[in-house]
Amino acid sequence: MTQVTTTVGDWNQQVYHFSQEVMVQDTLSIGIIGDFGPRNETHLKTNSSLVDAAARAGRDVKTDWLPTEELQEAPGSKLLYGYDGLWCSPGSPYRSTEGALAGIRFAREQGVPFIGTCGGFQHTVIEYARNVLGQTDAEHEESSPYASNFFITRLVCSPFDKTLTVKIKPGSKAHQCFGKAEIAEYYYCNFGLNPECKDAIDAGGLRVTGSDSDGEARIIELPDHRFFVATLFLPQQSSSPARPHPLIVAFLEAAALFRPARRALGTAG
Image (cartoon, rainbow, N blue to C red; front, side):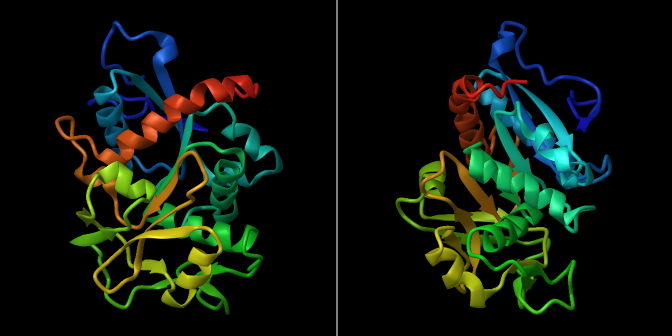
């Protein structure tokens, strides 16, 4: 487990601090599923966007990057206890696909607030297809190009390095977070939900609540979960101290509400 607790000048060693008046018990603990790269801009923005959102709430946030290879091991789930929220980061293909899927499954089954972005979106689809829909051979075209059951495929019109419009379904968790029916977000990926699998995913309970202009999935969520939202775009890229991203703010709000329940379940770190 790699602890990444940061100030502006040191991404790896220090705890996020916004106010010396904030009590220790107000520090949220977030586990980030992924293989941290100190030169990966999307990873650095994941860290800083949590700072932005926590500052808005007057809290501190402590983050631990959870390497996927460690999560793959039999006792790997022990690494996931003690967190107020889990985030599956960009960075696909991960060192261990199975480790990433294990982390996502833990959040889904244990009711831990969860957000997945870019590769996190893609693997949220795979986890759900395998473990809920019974599609045990569901695969990702990038990491398993010779598989026969692709739930994640190369996008015909790649949104890589583009800011594009997303239409949000009214009444969804995403709509509650953004407060509007249309947003513009930045992408850094070439793979997404196979359009042929969209209806199966949606009908199976993992709702598609955000789509692009062609109707392809860009946001998915579990309506009955306290907070379980994944986006193909990168909300962290547009976050700033002055304007923390609303989806990440909502994620931390859910994490704060979950904290007492986590303690009651005896999972506090």
